[in-house]
Length: 158
Image (cartoon, rainbow, N blue to C red):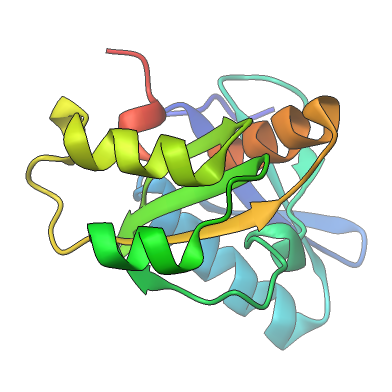
């Protein structure tokens, strides 16, 4: 195993060979490179975080898998689009800034508007999207999966 330089290794299995693609770039850039290379070579991308075991990167699972789309992160849009149901949500400015799980999407998104996270202050303009998920266990698992995938700055320990 090649040691992780910035907390991760990412590469592609191509036939019997494993090609380390990047561990010096940002996670987002390395992930894009692996996705492109895997598609071009019809191979599978794998990643390891912090010296843990490698796991496949499933690019189809990188989003919310919904048809809600993205909305401007403004009070009127939250009022109009965010339901008072449990689910997961993403705040983004280009890429995800924060990923959360909640019992009430509307109230939690309004809370973040009224009490912005310190790390989201410089990330403008923000958009939001969500997925309604009733099961608390499924919600937490999906949010954790997206946080590992995207490594949003507001979800990282300080």
